[in-house]
Image (cartoon, rainbow, N blue to C red):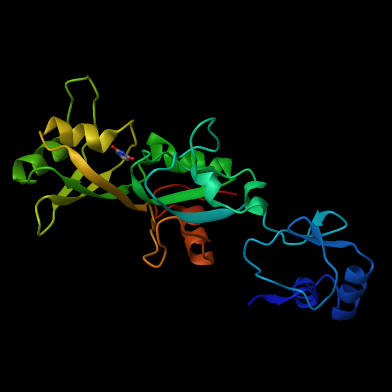
Length: 245
Ligand code: URA
């Protein structure tokens, strides 16, 4: 539905409704790069790049999007030959220089945070802060107690990869399990489970620190983080990382 343009401007407290109308009439207001024509135009507040004389109206410095990554796309900002998760965003969001926080394999689905907040990304990914990432995995075979203990003990793989202790919880159907990692090495879950003789056939990320994949988001859909989600990530990282400025 959206809100009227003059209301959006007036809600910032910087201009009255009458002054807002005047700014629009003078052609000084743009929305997502297009000059606005009248105060009655309606826009969604979230993800709106609204400017007066070229200066952003909303104070937010950074953008944070939760994406339900579908299979088949690269977790990268650009690629010569293949589609990336950034291709799912409209042009006005692509202009914000967003990048995915951490990589999911091309065939992995689920939670991906897109932001242009470099310091947050650095903290969430730093091994120093051990932010838990939880995945749903399906394997060819059945997960058992020996697999759980191997994960808990910290595996060293045949290819030399040394893994921190990780969580594995087989589900009611033991070809499915919930895996919790505190690091994110290349193809880590696939390599750990392959080393147990149980190759992964499906993988989906459910959460990262305090951020959980919104069950309402279908693969390929995204939405801005709520204030509560932003607060959890920025304020304390679920108690795991120190507050950011
Ligand atoms: N582990 C994997 O093997 N792949 C992913 O995409 C994420 C974790």
